[in-house]
Length: 115
Length: 186
View 1 (cartoon, rainbow over the protein chains, first blue to last red):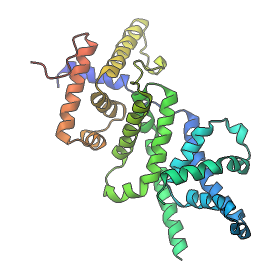
View 2 (cartoon, rainbow over the protein chains, first blue to last red):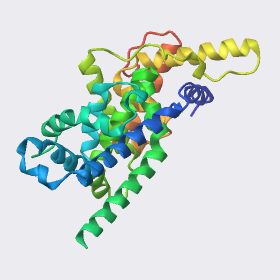
View 3 (cartoon, rainbow over the protein chains, first blue to last red):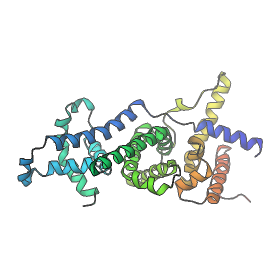
C-alpha cells in the first residue's frame, strides 16, 4: 500500500471513529426487556384461575404467557412502546401501564407471532 | 424437572445474549449512526436491532457453529436500515449532525484544516452508493475484517475485498473533487 493510500485510510479511520451510544439508551433497552418479562410473570402469578371461566378475561393471561414464554415478544414490546412514546414518569406504576398496553400487546402478538 | 431445565436453558440463553449486547452495543450504535446520520434515528435503529436479535438469538446460536455473531447482528441493522429508508422514502442525511464528534487536533491551523478534511471525508462517504458506504463503515468504524464484512453483506470474501477497494478509490476521488465515476478507472 502506498503512503498516500495509507494516509487516506488513516484519515478515514479518524473520520469514522466509533460513536458511543447515549448513556440512557442501554438503560432503556435493558429496562424494556426486563420489565416485560417481569410484567408477564406478575400477570400470571396474580391471575385468579376463577377468572379464566369468563372468556372475556382470557386476553390478559394469554398475553402474559406469550410475553413471558417467547423471545419474539421483545419485538411486540418494542412496537407497543414506540406507539405509546411517552415519558417514563408518566408510567411509574408498572401495573397501571400494563393495563393500558395489554390490549396492544395482544393485538401485536396476534399479528407477529405464529399461532 | 423439565421446567427447571427449561428455565435454566432460558437463563443461559439470556446470559449469552446479555454478553453479546454488552460487547456489541457500541458497534451497532456506530453502524446505525453512520448509516442514518443522526442520533435520534440511530437510537431507534439500535433498539430495534437488539430486539430483533433477541427474538432470533437461539436459532442464530445454533446455526453459527461457534462463529462470531457480530456480522449477524450488523446484518440485522443493515436490513432494518434498508426498511427504514424504504418506509420513509429517504436517503441518509448528507451531513453527520454532530460536528463535535470529529476529533480535534492541537494547533488552530491544523485544527481547522484537519476538521475540514475529516468533514469532507464524511460528506464523501454519504455520497457513496449504499453497499460501498456500508462496507467502509464496517471496516473503519467497526474494525471488521473482510470475512466479517462479507458475512454481514452476504457476499464472498473476494467480492468484499473488491468492494472495499473500489469504495476507497471512489471516496478519494470525491474528496479530491474529481468526477466520481464509481467504477474502474481506465
